[in-house]
Image: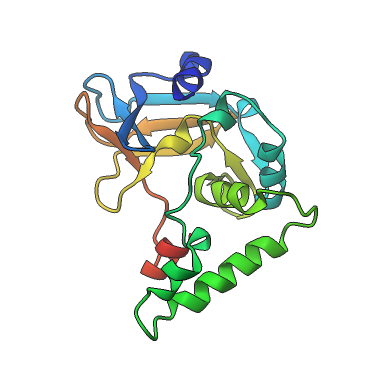
Length: 196
């Protein structure tokens, strides 16, 4: 599935590929030594899925293509999918337990169409979408290939922007062949990191 995604967008990708980092986990890796400020991806926005969280959720629910087949099949690391026993195992008095229940309830309340698997797809969108307009946090895009990048607080070596109707991803440092490319998902508190 990931190979098909890589092949589909190969004409827009330079010097990197999606690779495995463990069971069910992926990242993006340099295929050769790359200089700082090198272009990694220049994807026309017409290949991205744009909208707000809800629009994107319903959109990817309706698709069956190389992109949607490459999305993670399992989101059990997300607390909104934890079993009641897993939530109960949190330390007594933890503020996280009611936050998990509240987050789950909020996400499910967005589902005006009452679709099966809504929570799964909504969590995918919430964890993968790029905010493409700093003045409007509801203007989002799902960007095939780029949303396979993992987060790092200290090892960020790429930066992206939307320019001339393209999503452009470049290196910010030199990267050696085989090294993983990291984006930043933004600064969040520990609670936000766990919940989202």
